[in-house]
Amino acid sequence: MKFLPLVLANLKRHKLRTVLTTLSVALALFLFASLRSVVTTLTAGSEVSSASRMIVQNSTAFVIPLPMSYAARLASVPHVESVTWANWFGGKYGDGKKFFAQFAIDPATYLKMYPELAIAEDQKEAFLKERSAAIIGEGLVRSFGWKVGDNVTIQGTIFPGDWTPTLKEYGDDSFMFHYDYLYEKYPDRVTPGWFIMKIDDPTAAPAVARTIDDQFRNSNAPTKTGTEKAFASGFASMWGNVKVLMGTIGMAVVFAILLVTANAMMMNQRERTSEVAVMKTVGFSDRKVFTLIIIEAAVISLTGAALGLGAAVILPIATGFGQGGFLPGFHVTVGTMLVGVGVALLLTIASGVFPAWQAAKLPVVQALRRVE
Figure 1: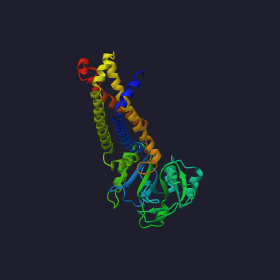
Figure 2: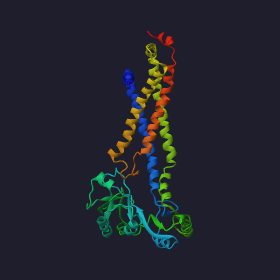
Figure 3: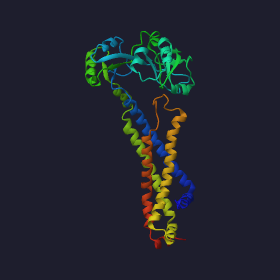
Figure 4: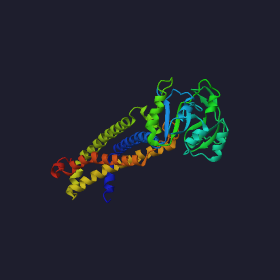
């Protein structure tokens, strides 16, 4: 630590270069953490899915609905304990700039299917009794300032018109209202978008899926049945191979910044040739010279990492990103932070070792000849 003032003095030699290099590292780590968080958020969505729930959708496309008559037929399949259904609504609120998921659900069967939904008992009872009621997530309460009992107008896009349910609250980031409320206005158009089933034995899921899909194979609306986890993962697959794409972009950014940082460190070392020679003349060993330059690289990399990773954590919270939207629950995990620190240490080694080695091995006589 006694050489820290010397390290800081060297970094201040070219303040603009040091600041720009540090900000470059910060930007690289910010992009790396943000892109990796997209992958971890999508993965987390499938990992929390229940092994005892299955989804039945139209085999042609997820957006094509299924007949209501399928509900009774699905309930008669062996191992199926209960059935519920839901519809994607696709409306917008206000200027429509903030997206959030909206579903029409069958209240009684849906809430029974998802007992993990954190709804106060009085709010649950009020929602079940009031056909024009909707339950909203805490994230939407924070984003829009809504409160329980408000009448909020949602503008339908798939189902045109103004829809004004009364709000109840629960602990998620979606907007759910009664399927019957939707059906009564569009009885000729509204049928379930997908069915959710609870089975008594998770190991029977493949057999249940085959039975259902074989039953409807030659119908006007053939089905595709799978586990809830596979259904959640399907949303990520619609983006293509997100994990590879995000990982590739993130590492490309880090590699580019590595070149920038290494170039800055080598420029610093070349400009300080005579200074290094003087340090060796007054007693600095090769090891101390090597260590000082590595510490300089570490200060730049770790300061940049702190700024970049800190921004990646704070910005989603400050802007409300991840509270609903396309990536509900988006946040930077501890694992991503640790990987980011590891990347910063790698940047330190990769950008600092070569110029430090050059300085350490520099002959004193040769260096002093360059003194003007």
